[in-house]
Image (cartoon, rainbow, N blue to C red):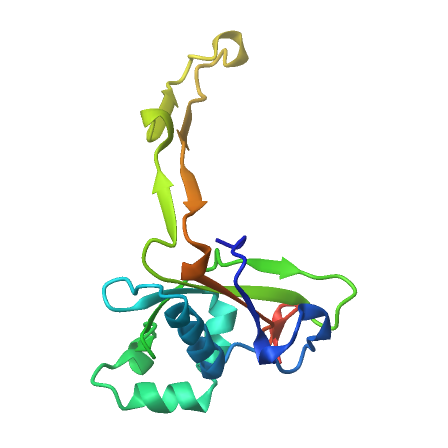
Length: 186
């Protein structure tokens, strides 16, 4: 999904080379703009909501936006107290450390983050060749002379999986920086 071509650079910049390390974080305004883009592209929500894949560093910055916090504060749920990502402006947030982060060299920022917002049928997945998961176990002594005392065993798994973007119009990739740099928050 990080290869999506509908790219929104934080702060309305033309490209990331103009970005600074001190502002251009993910904000509520960036989320609203991504939703507007998806709606203008006639992307359909998934179960009534768009889905945003967001990094924990980015989540920290978004929850520092007073507009987001004030809105979430007046909802009927207690997400601010449970730490669970609330739904906001028609977007359900899924926090994952696997979100796209590109470490930069020669830029004024340490890392460029991608928050990916998707609608229905944005991408598809498939199990390849019918071999979903293969679990391999070798008991002690099965290695022959490599294990003369019969004390080593191995266990492993492998999975075949495919994913493809089906509709570029149903994906917005927001590029931004985070307040978390070089292992320390600023």
